[in-house]
Amino acid sequence: METHNLYRDAIKALDWGDARSLDGADSVFVVGHKSPDGDSVMSALAYAHLMRQLGYNAVARMAGRANNETAFAAQAFGIELPQVLADVKPGERLVLVDHSDYSQAVDGAKNARILQVVDHHGIGDIAESKLLYAKYMPVGSTCSIVYTSYKELGVEISAEIAKVLFAGILSDTLNLKKVTVTDVDRSIYEELLGVLAGEWGMDLDSARQKVTEFFNGMSEAAHDFSSMTDEEIFNSDAKDYVLGCVKFRLGSLDCRDASKVDEFADRLLKVMPKIASATENRMAFCRLGFEEKTYMLYADAEGILVGLAQEIAEQAFGSSLRDGVVFCERRLSRKLDVVPMLTKALQ
Image (cartoon, rainbow, N blue to C red):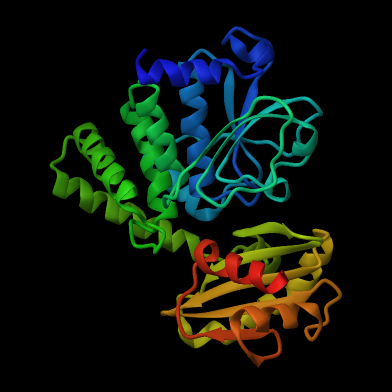
C-alpha cells in the first residue's frame, strides 16, 4: 500500500462524527493558539483545506483577532482570514495547530474532542483518552509541517495554498533569518517560491524581490503599535504556560529603536501585573529584544517586582539590571532559550 494511503487510513480512523462528510451538519474547527500570529493563522487555513480535500468538513478559525503583521500578510498575498472562535462547546471537535497546551488553546478546549495536534514546539499537556493524531517536527514553522502533510497524503498544493503556506513560513522564520530555521524550512521555502513565481509570471529573482518587499511590509506592520494600548501591545504576542503549579504569561516583543528600549520596557512593566492578574497568571515575563541584545522583564500578579518573579528571572537569566529587568548580552529565542531557561529555574 502506498504511504499516502496509510496516512489517509490513520486520519480516517479518527472520531470525525458527522463531520466525516463534507455534507455533514457538524464542522471540525482547525484553530491555532490564542494571540494568533501568522504561522498560527496560516497553518489553520492550509490544514483545514487539506482535511477538506480528504472529505472532512473542516473549517479554519482564529482564537483571537489577527495581529497587524498577519493582517498585512493576508492583504499582500490576497488571503481571506478566518473568523474568530472565542470558545467551544463541550464535545465539539477540534484540530489544534501551532500549539499543544490547554493554556494556549481556545476557551473550552479541555472539554472539547481534540482529533489532531500539529505543532513545532515542545509536546504540551493536551491529553485525549480516545484516538489522537499528533504530528510534531523540529522546524521553524508549523506551515512547514503542514506542507509535509500535503506531500505525505498525496494532495496537490495549489497556488492559493502555496501563498498561505508561504505567508506563514515568512512570518515565523522572519524570512529565514530566525535561529529556529532548519534546512527543511529552507527547502520548502524555495519550492513554494517557485510556485509563486509561476503564479505571478516572474522569474525566481523577481519573485524573491517581491517576497522581500512583502516581508518588509509585514515587519513594519508588526512594529506599528501606534493604535494599540500598552496592554494590547504586550498581549499581541503573548502565550500562557503552566509548569508544575505555576502559571505564567510570556510575551515576546522587539524594540526597533534601541535608544527607546528603556522607555518601552517601563511602559510594559506598568501593565504586566494587571495583565497577569486579569489572565489568572501568577507571574508575567516578556522577552524584549533590541539590536542583538535582550531585556527579560518580570512582574508578579500582585504588582510586586521583588517577589517570586524576580527570583525566577534572576535564576534563569542572571542578576537584575534594575527593578523588573534582567539584561542578556545576546538575543534570546522564546522557544529555544526563554521557555527552557524558565522551566529549569521553576524546577
